[in-house]
Length: 277
Image (cartoon, rainbow, N blue to C red; front, top):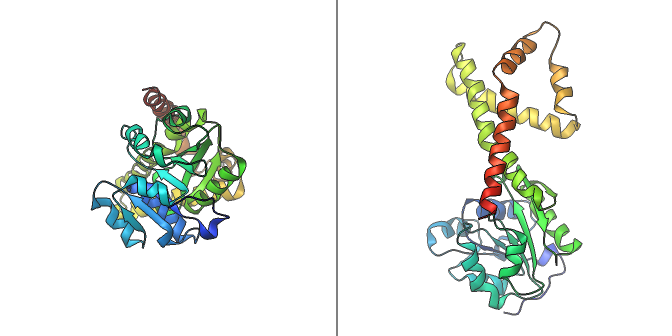
């Protein structure tokens, strides 16, 4: 099938090469938000193990990567990074100047993507995180040399169905991995520690974990909706001689701030190492 540029979201056909958890989360977000019709999503994978979840969403599936590229002009490549070069070599013969190709694979630079694809191919990189599964993701995107404003705006509009998305210089993609990709695990560790503090003081485990998670959720919403610096919100909660300042003092003695900064730094450095390989 010849690929032609679609006029807008109403006729958009979206392809996924790779059908893992993140690809499913993105597809689910697009469909639930009404950005793309389920029957206009085509996903490929070597086996049916992951494709069955796309079928459950009402999407089309195939085992042919080339079929996805031939039938969709916006294609997300959500394979494992070490597999992506071979996949791009496979689909390159059917890539046209009408395609917009989006890499979800960590560590593969825009310049590498452009080298592996035909000249003037429009490519972008995105870095999503696991909360995309519940449409509360934090994502960044970076565009290649041949990608125009309208291409970037289209992708950003789609991705906002899965959470918050901002365009950044490519140099910030690895930092986002350290901050938000790995940050999900850091936040989970803090949530677990909060709950365990309450359990130590006598609260039932299930209740403590539910309240800790809701506290993180509510605080995040406050920060986003009010647009305040976290220090301001912290000050609002912290009354002189009250419970919060005593707790904050204990956190400072434990080095929470420095440890968290070091965690983001370590994860970012590792992302940069992987990008250099």
